[in-house]
Amino acid sequence: MKDMRILFIRFFESYYDKTVPAAMKRLGWEVGEETFYTPADQTRDDRLAQMVRDRLKGRESSWDFCFTVNFWPLLAPVLDDLGIRYVSWSYDAPLAFVGTPEMERKNNYIFLFDRGQVRNYQKQGVTRVWHLPLATDPDIFSREIEKHGSDYKKCGVSFIGSFYYSPYPSVVKELSEHLRGYLDGLLEAQRNLYGYYLLPELLTDNLLEKINADLMKKKDKSEDAAVFAGHVTKENFIYAMATRITCMDRLTLLALASGITDTVVYTSNKPEEIATALHRAQINGKVDYSTQMPVIFHNSSINLCPTLRCIETGIPLRALDIMACHGVVMMPVSEETMEYLENGVDSLLYSSDEEAFEMMKFYLSHDDALEQIRENAFKKVRSDFTIEERLQTMVKTLNEN
Image 1 (tube, one colour):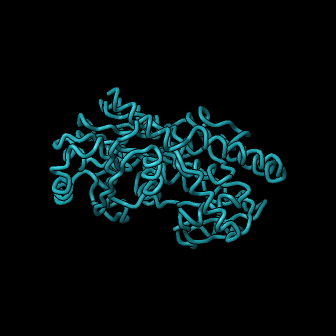
Image 2 (cartoon, one colour):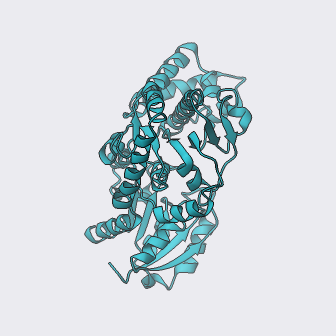
Image 3 (cartoon, rainbow, N blue to C red):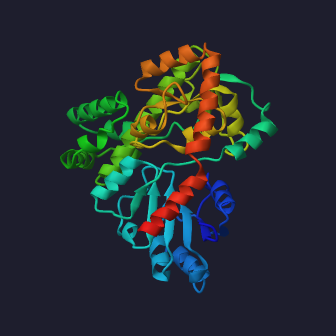
């Protein structure tokens, strides 16, 4: 697999901007890089498509394939027309669009970390998608921890991430009492169920029609409801429900943690949005992914990682990064966490708030057990979640398809 030539195309600043090109070079591949502006619409931007076409035309034979972080539908027809294979690897789930004809371009190789998402696209008839778990680079983080390890004090529990803004509460209050009660029941059922994603099955077309009809009838609507009125789709309403549940998950677990140990939160959310629920926690602003985040993961006894609920089965990058920093990750059970990780050995996996709370109480009083999990987690990502191995899997898929 040596002597490969890859063009890394960048449309936004991603977590893989440095690590993936570095891994390609370690494999002996030649890597070129091209950076463009971030389009407002991933599916269509004629000006950007022409810019890419102009920059690559005449160089079609220079690359074995072009690579992007996340799939960009606007790029697929350009590369297909030029006869260049297009490889993408997404760490977002779900993708910011539903199945599109551009996904079926013959030169596409779309790798998704969430097996559930792959199954969903395949049900829609999309054939150019493959499952590929994410990976991380422990060496980059180790260097930062060595340089900045004393910048952040040790704490019992930490959380780095968003609490999301969901339009669900303001939209659902505009619905009839019966419909509102039914949807709140669905939300609560999913909230209490880890390891299985109910919402896509239960949010039926008939139910969506009723939501749209209710919103269209209401005259004085909230801003969110006005935006949704007549435009509720399965995808956007499920995402609104999933982000609402995720916010509830994170606030609940952090509130429980802050009652038993020093708990520190790093988020881009405004403090007043979460201060009431987390009045016992220390709330800070967002931190830098490359320099600050690794130290916090390393210096926390437990790193809470409640997964965005619309990730159906996959292991998010944040969890792997925690493990790569000699950190202990606590996250919900899912199809793939149970397949690739081992509860109590290299991670802490919970199936309810109550179980998570009991785990926190036990492990915070057993430092030796936490230390063993740290070591096992680091060994796990170094052996099973390397970017080099994932890149080699991509090339094997290209050669076979």
